[in-house]
Length: 370
Image (cartoon, rainbow, N blue to C red; front, side, top):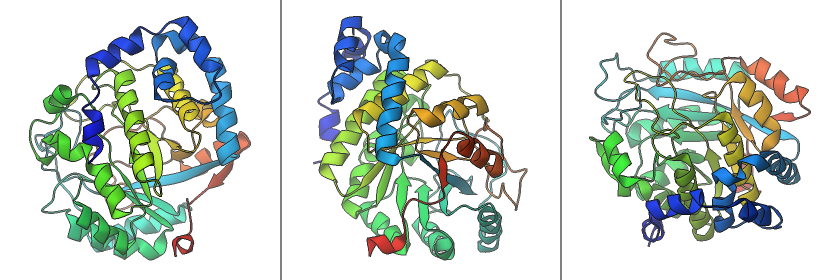
């Protein structure tokens, strides 16, 4: 059994119809509830709930403070490689893009890590394109072992792997894995992933199951907003979250909210997602689950990130470089996508503290898991 069985009991078109048919009275009734379930989540992400964003935001803020206190975790991505064997219409690393490819050597990895550590980070996200031959399991395992002593938390965002491969990386020091389905609409998924291992929708869909069985500490989920209707994709992500929490209850979970950003080989968003829409969605997730971590990247603007801090977000990146070697080794290499908030770490830290929050540089100590 896997999430695929749950996924196949739902129909995209029916869900879309249900979400857009929600009435104002249904929203009012939902907001009176003490506990929110998946059916209520559909109500809270509906167009009918838009006029109630302020009420949702107040409740989201209260729930987040109750569970996480006045803390915001900071992390930083480090791109190891832009080599990729997939064709993805929305990604600068797509195999069809004629760009200079680069994979960091041990020396270059340590140069990047030295810079990152000088900024204060103790939680790092390692990112690669999806290229099994050059940045496969052996490369990733070696990279984790190379920097393990430097960080309390090492997270990866790479190609989906088999269970035994995740087990090997966990043994090497891996803490968390981010794996985004991009979109849960199968036909649209195929359109944007026509070639490469990533074109296998079902294999990607079952990746969090393999992670749960491998015993990973934390799994990050999300959809790329712009490929399909963000409301329906968000419901499927919430459905996926609840399935995983029930099935792999020892694992922690996080949700991210990436919106399409400018990149090489640009594709225009099919469905626009406004800032107000994103605020509504973040608040709906918090009301659904007060324990799930909600993460916000530098894809979003300075103004938006300033204002979202108090509304449910628990984790934020800063000073992100989306190209391999972008911090110290090769700042001019091609980015995967353009970031929006270009403030440095010190400025983000100051912004967080100015709102009465404490910056946390790591998620847990390795000794806690012994």
